[in-house]
Image (cartoon, rainbow, N blue to C red):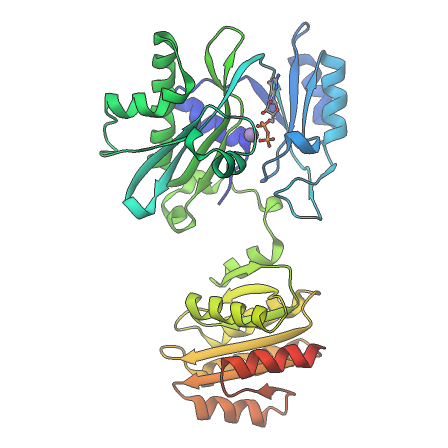
Length: 387
Ligand code: GDP
Ligand code: MN
């Protein structure tokens, strides 16, 4: 789960990280209230709160000189559709704006703290090249990216602090500030089950102090059951409606851009199914894993979800019956097809537990279903059927 920049800054601030004073608005009528809170002779920065980066380059970060300009920029920002390299071509509507006291920047750095699965620890990544696309820095000048793996996540050693802060070339005062920020990032990660805490840019401000100018936090979805406070920060406006619907049924669903909807059991098989669709020249419309022992209600919800996606031109169901039974799958498909009109080609490939019973249910349903013998045959058939 993602949270907004202002929420991420609040979490970091609670552990002593320096952030600017700011105000959140979600409605135009709140702008008037803001007027009395803003200071004369203070510059502000008006920031779109969307769950996507690259706002700066897309007009989602506006520096303003006085109260009037700030209020106007906030008014303009609210409701605007922002297209950044992370939003997709449709962009995202700005439903929340953050107004904070602006900082003067002497230098911009990059720092993040993340769960390093391959080493079973927490790793800090730091770079002198902050503010810009860190992926590009990693590609063009990898030597400028410093990775520091913590050997003990309960106590960071002096060597580790030095290694993390090395690219910033700090004086002794700033090193102390850096340590506070590192500790805050680590505590936020551990306390909230974050998979990523990123500050980009971390800056040196006019007073030569380290300061967090942006913040991004990702939380591990699998830990949300024990993070009630974090769950309150969830903003459903920022999530794909079909993915919210899928989460109600505990379906692992991710919407994609293609035309072929897929329903599969098992993440590995789902990936293989998507690959084989691509090999036959088409793109999958989604990733969907109905999971191990899915009920017919769950299968039915999954099919309805796929059918609700208007870009879907055909559906491929690929089930390898193990714990999941083919007859349960078939009944779920038939039930869903009774409720919503199935007017696009559907190819079904079934194998494994109760396959004959499953095929019989599909046959007797009189639904127009193309059946396939194996995965390759299934992909070939659905690609042909939508042409
Ligand atoms: P992002 O583009 O979505 O990552 O948004 P950021 O919050 O990182 O802002 C983008 C850029 O705007 C930063 O790299 C800064 O250069 C600039 N910026 C953001 N806040 C301030 C500020 O308070 N003062 C100044 N001078 N620039 C800022
Ligand atoms: Mn940023």
